[in-house]
Image 1: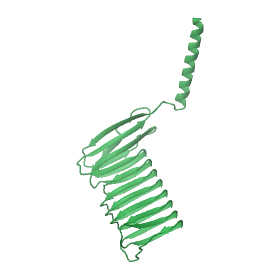
Image 2: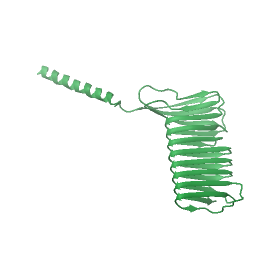
Image 3: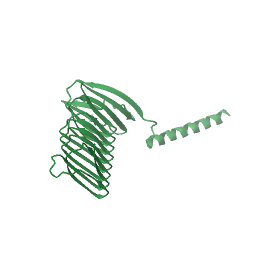
Image 4: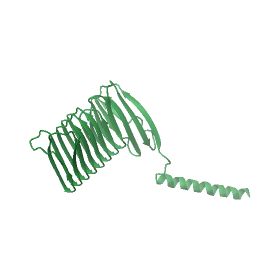
Length: 244
């Protein structure tokens, strides 16, 4: 009787080992580990460079003297540890490797420039200086005041910008909508391959160049002699200019 029970026990143990071996072979390693960490950067950061494969990046500027980097990391295997680094006055927000994603929430001093890309995830930037960002799959949201040049490009996702006192703006979405809320912006170039473009501007004089191959145009107030320029182009979608 005991021998039979031992045999059954051995058989079950062998089955468990086989299942565990198959799980490892197929990458079934159980649920991923999630962790959060916050680091303070004493160096005077003037530029943020983003190169993140997976995870949202949120950057906001404030009247502070140091930079704070919050990281929300999801990973399998070894803990990746700190996922950013500093090179001189540049804060590098990078990914954390295979089987790992990291979301950043960063507070920087006023006037810091933000550039870079995220492969999968949103980019949100508020209140900083010049911005030049791209999301391959995700949305880009910008809330900026007093920048010289702003560029937001999305391959699959929406562009949503709220800008005040910005000299030049470029906004492009290959598959998605472009929503522009503009005050005191001199030159705007917006393009959507498949999606709508909506520009909300204060009432005044604008040189409007709007076109759509398949869609409707709702544009008024075009002044060919105006200094401020709105160039709005979509291949498939509507173009709308609203006055406030």
